Image (cartoon, rainbow, N blue to C red; front, side, top):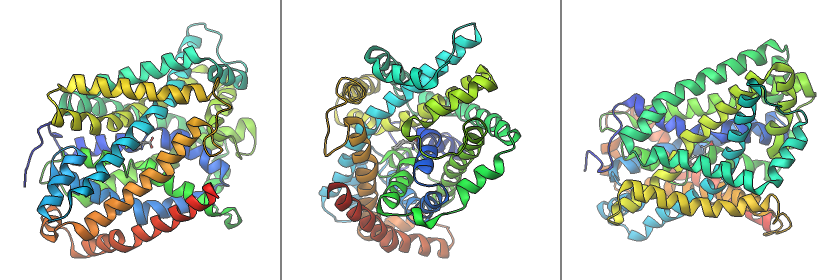
Length: 452
Ligand code: PFF
C-alpha cells in the first residue's frame, strides 16, 4: 500500500474537506438545484434528491475516496492497481475512462455557464462604477446567448482561471485556492441568505422546498433527482477518487465523506432559502424558469435591491464554479502526467484547450446551431443529459459494484480500520445492494422514457 501520491498531498484533513466540498459545491447547488426544484414542483423533488444522496451518493462517495487513497494515482491507473491487488480484470479501469469522458463533457458546458456568471459579475461590477446595469433582464440574457463572441470569450476566461489553478499542482494550486475561496463563498452565501430572511418570504420558500406534493413525482423527476445527486456530489466521474488519492492515511474516510455530503446538501438548501424568498418577493410564485431562472429572475430583483447584491451573487456563483471546475480538470491532468513525459502545466493546458473546443459546440447550440437536435435535444442539453443523468450514475453503479463486490476485503478493511462495525456494515450493504439496484432501476427507466 502506497502512502503518498506523486502528484502531492493535502496538508490536512481540513484541506481535503475544503477541496472536496469545493468540488461538490458549485453551479449544481446554486444554479441547477434551484431551477430543477422549481421546474419539478418543489418539495417532492427535494425529498427524492435527499433520498438519493443518503442511499446512493454517500456510500459511493466513501467508495470513491477509498479507491483513490488505496490506488494513489489518477483513476485509470489507481483502478489497475486495485484490480491487480484483488485478482480482477484490468477492464475495470474502464470506470476511469468513462470518468474522463464524463469530465470533459461536463467541463465543456460547465465552463460555458460559468462564463455567463463571470459576465454577469462583470456587468454588476461595472454598474457600481457608473455602468448601465441590467435594465431588461430577459433581453440581456437573450442577447448574451445570441452573442457567440461574448460567450466564447467568457468561456475562455473561465478555462484560463481553471488551468491557472490546476497547473500549479495539489498544494500550491488546488489547496491554496480552496483555502481562500471556500470561506469567501460561505460569507457571500450567508449575506444573501440573510437578505432572503429580511424579505418576509422565508416561510413560503421553506414550504416550497420542504412540503412535498407527491402528485408531481414521475419517472423523469426521479431520474433528474438521481442525476442531480451525482452531479452535485461530484460523483461517478472519479473526481472524488482523484482527490482521495491525495488524502493522508490517518484521516477517517466515512467522517470526511459525511462532512462533504452535509456541506454540499446544506449549501444547496441554503441557496434555495436565499434565492426563493427573493424570487417570491419580486416576482411571485417560484415555478418554472429553467436554466435561465437565476439569470432572468434574479436580476429584476437586484435592480431593486442594488447592484452590490448582483455582484455578490454572481461572484459567489463564479467562485463556486471555479472550485468545482478544477476537480473536473484534475483527473485527466494527473492521468496525462502519469502516462506521458508531459509536465503538469503542459498536461493541464492541453486538456483545457481540448475541452474548450468541445465547449464551442455548447456555445453554438445556443445560437447558430440552435436548430440542431440530437434525439430531440439541443446539443448543450444533450451533453448535459448524457453526462449528468447517464454517465455519472453509470460510473457510480460500476464503482459501487467494484468496491462492494470485487475489491479484496483486506484492502477495504485496511482503509476503514478503526471505524465502528455498524457504520461499515450499513455502508457495505448500501453499496452492495441498495445503491446499485436503485441506480439501475432509475437509469433503466430513464433510458426507456428518454429514448421511447
Ligand atoms: N459538483 C459540481 C456542482 O455541483 O456544480 C459539479 C461537478 C464537479 C460534477 C466535479 C462532477 C465533478 F466531477
